[in-house]
Structure formats: structure tokens, C-alpha cells
Image (tube, rainbow, N blue to C red):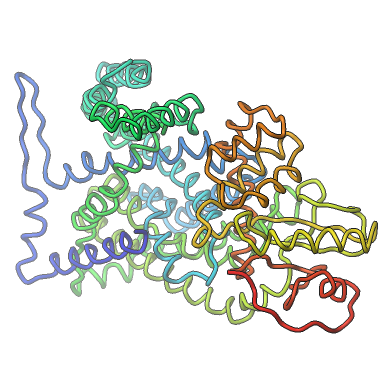
Length: 595
């Protein structure tokens, strides 16, 4: 979806440029300046097609941005300071450094007002570009850049609200605030929440439009009023009961009740993201590109842009400012010890991602339209945004090709990317032991289950000289229950029962449905209510994802995979073979690995 969305944006950008540069290109401007009039009683709304796209349709884009921001701060990456501190600092530098570079080149006059166009990264293009031009295993980098993009979006939205609101009408603004409060209260309605959200949101948008605040910000404000939560236990249990009743008596009433209960177990925020994100990606953003990227690239325009401090200020700010700001802030956080990068995420990779962050496009073009009234200035600024985005993509692509050549992922996969940490890892044996064996495993993998006997023998043989470490690598492609089983083991660990619970999972590998996982918690005498809540928590999901992302970076694709010390073990993993490997003695024939 991400590649398709970015490709569609690129296609519509090309169509806009082609349309604007046809011999009869005046039709481009004439079409988007066509007026739309809507009159209801004494209330009249007048806007052009261009305004309709930028003020009305783009409200849906900013709505989805707001939903993502709310989710990340409530249940996502930004709930954990230790995970967020580096990308947040990098994002702030990625906002400030480009703005400083632009204002250094355009310190005054009409040009200076366009500074907001250089602070934002186009998330849709960024993710698509990372998929096309990024490194072979971009998992960790993608999480870092998406976290950064959330903070980047907040900065851009704040700039629009504070610096690009020309006049304020008090009464419509107060009406918009009251309507937003009502949107927040809709969650307490017993029924009819969908229509209530729709009606109040349209009214809030209209009041915001009338107030002088840019109407798209209504989309953000509404999104922040929408509740977000992880699936709640009572809802999940109710859905299970209804599904069981429907299986026994498949009536339309039970079908409707089950579907309704299933829907309500997921937060409104996530349901709306799933509903609107495809429309925004495949309709709103392409239309925005078509309406805003059409700049006439004739000789006079290109000549003016080539000599324009505005154009070059935008290019320098987005390409140099984003790369230097994000990479420099990340390096500073590491040097000072204020934050650390995830395993396998190097400054070299951050630098490539920072270069791609220079693709400003959507919000950059949006702010150009707000900041500059003169058509020539708008044309020069749009040439700068388009040129900067193309340059940033080319720089990022070249950067990653060099990094992958200097440090191939296949070489990285031979070494353990994250050292053993007794405070975090699941281990058996002496944490101070001179010998270390790390396993990346999967609770639904029969080969991992058989390997437990070898581990027991090793610990008995070496005694206090060995520490054994378990890390998650759920191979969901072949083991559909592995992901939830891994989360269940982490939920059990929160009650001090990781090892005992893991043995039950291995013993019952053919029975790893949700009901089974809860039954095993009951067998061990765990607090089942707490277990259920932890099973659905973001912290548990992140804990499993961390191990899986390590494995992705090391190109691990089979379980069990062992590391003896820091080096990947290749070959058999029976007890005698592992003993020889741990003692540094040769021997042992190769055997077929698990799937």
C-alpha cells in the first residue's frame, strides 16, 4: 500500500506538471479557480475547486494525521520515553535547522514568510521512498522515521495554526470550541455515535472555516477528541460469548450482535484510521498533488527560479537542513548519553533516512499556498519544493547504496547486534558466566521445542560457566499462532512465570488459541484478569517486536537460530554440537534447519 500510495502521488504530480505546461496550459489555472457556491438559508459558502481540495478534502488528511498522533502518544511508540527520546530530539532538530538555513538565505521580505514550507517531511512519500530506496532490512529505521514523522507533523501543524492564521473571528471560533467539546462527549452516547461524530465534525469544520483559522486544523482537533485504547477485556469476552452463541445458533440477530461487539472492541481511533486511510492515500493526496504541483516550467519561470534565493533557500533547507539536523541531533544524543539507538540502527542508516526526510512535498506545497500570494513567488517556491524532493530522494538512494556496500546486511547477520542484558533478557544460568548462548526461537516451532532438551543438558554440563538467553522470533508466515504465544509468554513474565509458561506452550504447540493461552495462565495460578490486560498491552507487543526487529536486521529467517557468544552458530544444535561450539572445539556435521 505504501509503495502504491507514493507511486500514485508521483503520477499525479507528473500529470499536474504536464497539464500546467500544455500549450493551452491556462486551462489548468482556470479549472482550479472555478467557483463553487453553496447556499443554505442565509448561510453561503463560496470557494474554488482549489479551495475545496486544500480546505475541505485536506481536512481528511489532517484528520488521519491527528488520529496517528493521538494513537502514538496514547498506546504507541511515544508512550515510552526511552524509545522516543532520540527520534523526538531528531525531529525537533529537523524542524529548527531547516528553518534556520532558510531564514539565513531569506532573512526578510515576502520570501521570509515561506519558511514554514521547509520544516515538514511528507510521511507518505518518506515511507514509499524508504521501501524503494532504503536498505535491505529497514524495520528499525522505519520505526525510527515514523516516530520522527509524528513529531514533525505536530511541528508543521503548530506552525500553520500560529503563523499562518491571518485573522480571527471570535464567535465562530467559540462555536468551533463548543462543537469540539461535544465531539469529545459523543463517546458517552449509548447508541448513534457514528452519525453524531459525522454531524458534529462537519459543523466544527464549518465554524473553523468561518473563524479564520485554517479549516484543515479542524480535522486535527476532531481527531484529538476521538478515544483510543487497546482492546478491552470485557468487550473481547462479550465478543467470544456472542461468537460461540452464533456458532451454535447462526441467526441474523446473533450475526449482527457479534459484528457490532467485534467492532466496539476496537477503539474508534483505530477504526477510523482503517476506514479513512485508503481514501486519503488513494484519493485526497493525489488530488492535492494534481491541484498544487502544476507549476509552469517554461524558460522564464526556470530562469527566475535558478536565480531565486527563495528557490535555493527551500532546496538547501530541505536537503541539507533535514540531513544535518536529524543526523547531528541523533549523534549528539548518543555522545551525551541522553539517548541510545536501537540495536542495528547505526548513524549511517539514520543519515540515509534523514536525507529522505528532505522530501517535503504535501505540507510544503500546502504552506506555500498559505504563505505567498504573488503567483511568481508561488511558482519559484513550488519549483524549490519539487527540486528538493527529487534531490532528497536521489541523495537517500545513493547514501543507502554506499552503506549497504560498506556494511552488507549479510555480514551484520553473523554477529549478535544486541548484547545480553540481564535486566531485560530472559535467561537461565549465571548472568556473569563466561560462556553465553543466545537462541532466537518461536513457541510454535517444533524444532525449538526439541531444542529445549539440548539446553537442559548444556546447563547441567557447564553449570555456572554458562548463561542461556531466549529471544523471540515468531515466524507468523508458517506459525500463525506464534505472535500471540510470544505475547502471552511476556504477559506471564510480568507475573514472574515466563519459564513455566514457556514450557506449557512447547508442550501444547497444537493448542495455542487465545482460550488455550488463558487456560495455561489459570493452570499456573496467575492473575487471569491481569494476564488478559497485559496480553493486549502495547508494552508487551513492543517487547516482542523489539526481538523480532533485531532478527530482521540480522536476516534471521529460521528457528531456532543460536549465537555462541556474539557469533552466529551454523550447523547442528544437538547438545554435543553446542558443547563443542561453546568450548571452541571443531566438529559436528551440518544438519537441516527448521522452517
